[in-house]
Structures are given as C-alpha cells and as structure tokens.
Image 1 (cartoon, helix red, strand yellow):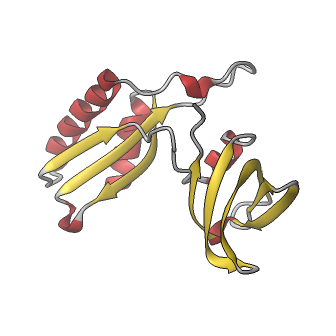
Image 2 (image 1 turned 135 degrees about the vertical axis):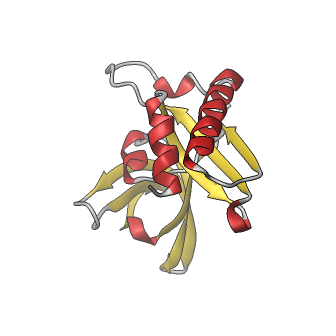
Length: 157
C-alpha cells in the first residue's frame, strides 16, 4: 500500500479528511494536514468548527501506531490543521468551497495573467476535463483544473 493511501485510510477512519500530505527529502519528515469532513445538513457553515490540538494528537498517535505496524521509516511526524488559508487540492474541494473567496495561481498564464482572486463559482465538466469557474471583477473566468498550480481560501476576519 502506498504511503498516501495508508495515511488517507487512517485519517478518514478517524472521521477526518486528509487535506494534504508532504514529505521531506528521503521521507524523514512526514507532514499531514487534516480537516473536518464536510457536513451535509443543508444549513449553517460546517467550516467554522475547525481542528483542535486534541484532534491532531489523536491522528498523530494513530498514525504512529500504523506506521510501526507497517514498518514506515521516518524521523518526525507533524499533524496539523490546514489553516484559515486552506489549500484546495482535490476536485471535491472546488465544489465544497463554492461561494468562498479564493486566490489561484495558474501553471500556464491566461492572457498575460497567472494570479487570480475572486469568488469561486465551482467546478463544471467531467472527471479529467473539469473547469474551474471564478468570479473576478464582475466577470466569470474559466480555466482547466489541471492548469491550476495552487489555490487557497482567502481568510475572512
């Protein structure tokens, strides 16, 4: 089993979502970002609940046990929240956070512009052909999901 799949299965088994996973060179540092699973209750803003230190500790302890059983060699494990400026990594993230303000950076410029910010309108199209829709400056801009290098939520205080 791949390390990513092992971590994803463990994190989701504890009732959390694996947002992102990073390793240092030679995989000596494993950095795991977790979030609460989206709640489908039809009302309210589920994103306000956040991740606590106890949540990170729970996931860290469980991952440590799993890594011991699976013989995963590492020096340090860090488990944390993705933060207020949460990255959008998976296609489901673009659907989940539709209506939120985001900042995007493209791999290949569109027009002479690589950086965009605005309100995420969502994702349309089929798997592999998804298109991100972003309302920026009173116009909707569309670009292929595979052209997005980075995307993050803009924190609201």
